[in-house]
Length: 61
View 1 (cartoon, rainbow, N blue to C red):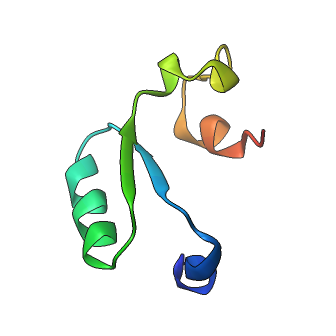
View 2: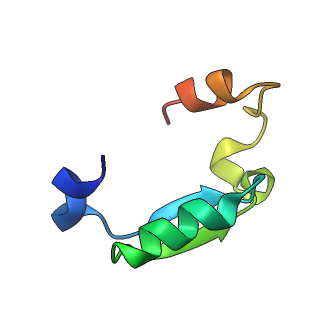
View 3: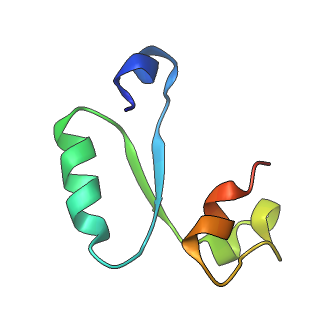
C-alpha cells in the first residue's frame, strides 16, 4: 500500500495501539522510517479524537 509512495515518504507515524509493534516491525523491515506518537499531544489533532477508528481515519487535516 505504501510502496507506490516510497520516494515521497519521509516517515510513517503510528499511534501506540494494541499490537502496534507488529505494524512497526513490518514497516521497518520494509525500510520505512517509523515514529510512534500519542495523538493527544499533537496540537493539530487536538479535539478531533472520536470514539471509533472509522471516525478517526476519516479526519483529513
